[in-house]
Length: 499
Length: 96
Image 1 (cartoon, rainbow over the protein chains, first blue to last red):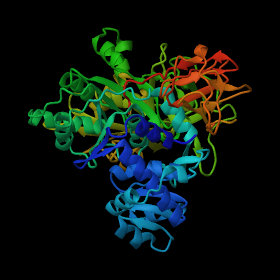
Image 2 (cartoon, chains in turn cyan, red):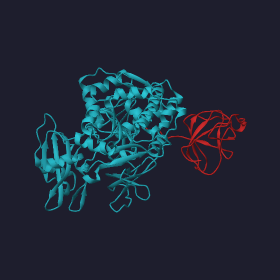
Image 3 (cartoon, chains in turn cyan, green):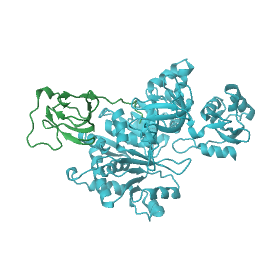
Image 4 (tube, chains in turn green, purple):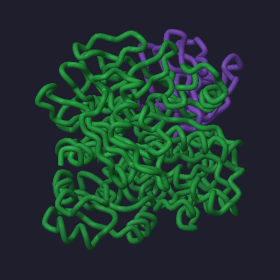
């Protein structure tokens, strides 16, 4: 079965309803389907094996996603922020491709790789103009790969994660009711197109007939303006965006955000301070923390609006702590915490997070990472409480192994962040002659506060956690390195600590 | 028959996409569903005239068959004479 069915059904049920608003232009479901069918023709003519998008979010992301599906070639959005050399390497792995976006750049860095390149405007125009009647065409049955995403490659060369039509449809059919959105519903999409959350947002919105409003390049003021003018009801943000939106609201209260009913966040750790402020600033909105990975077709665990309210209102420290959890597994997947030997662990014990379900691909172009029973090792470390709430302690690779004891950076950071003068903190392994690895921490001092002493930082950890967690090394930095999705680059912090 | 195939009702406008299937005959409006619509419509059985709903998934009691209605009609869906029931998605609180 083919993911193009999602758009076909939307266009069948509501051809003239507005599906997308981008840069002031409105597209109906019928418009988008026609252009996706035109894209099929362009792919046939070009002989491309992939369709790549090297661009910010726009109508081209939807048209290319579904056009690729109809033609049976993988859709491969690329990160335009990559350096030329890295990008050329990725383009070479998908040649020959139909590439949409920065024509000048592709020609310059990958001109000899056999790609067919279209600037965005030319692509959408051409795709709209060349569609024959659907009856004359035999579209792909959808038994293969729908989307290929290169992982960010923070530890090694980027891996090509593949999502089959069956994975993506498993996620959508399991979690979205067709045409369930009200006429007035509108989702603000600000995640870049090469991120899995950006792709699943398009598919969920289209299948539920919820209007998509795109903000191609994030700014807090641009976001607030669109929420106000387009009466946005649903939005997904990464934690750093939410922090900046709240700061902008503090400076200028002129925008009406009362239409927002649901704000989801994910993609990085949400500071407790930010989410607490957000709950005050958007009292009418339900907040959802969504946890997922590229290899799992997006969300696998959720902390829903009720959980947020219950945690805020509770006197029970265990329930309050849930505000910093990933929530519980969604009903259509299973999640387990396992130790290094692969044994399932009881509640409260930390290990690696494993997941299984129809939406879980766990597959790379080179090989599948699933075990014989279909479980995918996420490489995320964490534990589950008695009620199945999952707490993330970091990437399995980020665990600090001190003299055989596994230490979670998150546990140490949570304590540091309670210090009033500490705005941000990261714990990472530093080499130790005695222990193999020991704890190092990088600390950002809050504006207008005096820098706490190294001894004070160490004593704070000693008072709250076991002595093995006390840092050997403390450095003070202006800011911590994050990528554009708000992910803390721990590899870079390690460099800071060992410099 | 295999997953991904599109079946049409011989008795009404209903069309379904097969998500899962086992042994048995898929019917709509009391008549077997087909890949190509017959020139002459089959009569709509009054016992199977509850109608199908666009976008709903239909399953049998044994969970062998799952059909997605991609075009609604007046007939209702069945396998070997036993009516199918709808299966609801478990909507997430707008996570994406």
